[in-house]
Image 1: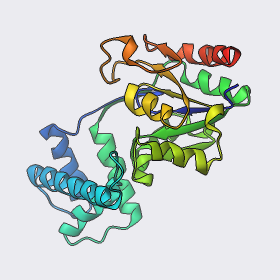
Image 2 (image 1 turned 120 degrees about the vertical axis):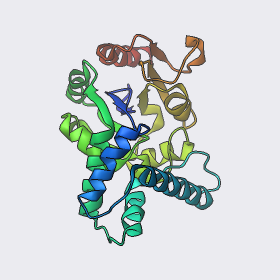
Image 3 (image 1 turned 180 degrees about the horizontal axis):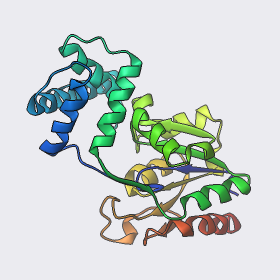
Image 4 (image 1 turned 90 degrees about the vertical axis):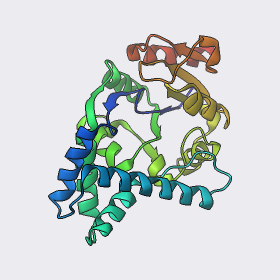
Length: 249
């Protein structure tokens, strides 16, 4: 039996569309900083933001030379942007900025149909429910709370906090070690054939793949290494599939 189910988030439980590229978004972002006393033009803000993101990623790669997949905390990027304008931003200001930044860049966000029933079904069956997500903690936790799913998770690990991301083997290992999970008793559920499925396989965790519109391209189902594959994106099939896999062990 799979005692612990590890979920990816965006594209697996949450359907989301964002835009951080249009000039219209950067005009909105300028207003976020302006209300806090930091004056930028849209091009200046976008250029500085991109520069500090790249610099932070380089720093993490130097700190972890064996990691191919690293991540950063965008709160530190926002801190540098405020410093450029002579503002010493505290955590409250940084989190408020992150919240506004994310809201303005989000075109759509919702749970896939069947997510609540899935999580409630797993909890009722006595399963542990965990999250392993390539994401920003300052974005993700508020969104999970607002969508009503934060309470279902027994453990959460987010790449911005750990400075490493899927499919890096060490990210999966951290989750297993922190929550004392046996990989043979875990099932990884995700929508990315590489980040989720191959990453899980690298530490001996079985995979259940669900293909969504925002999943990386899959030209042929055979490209996906997983015990089961749900190619039509129907989250309502996940609970039954997990229970079926238990009986096949």
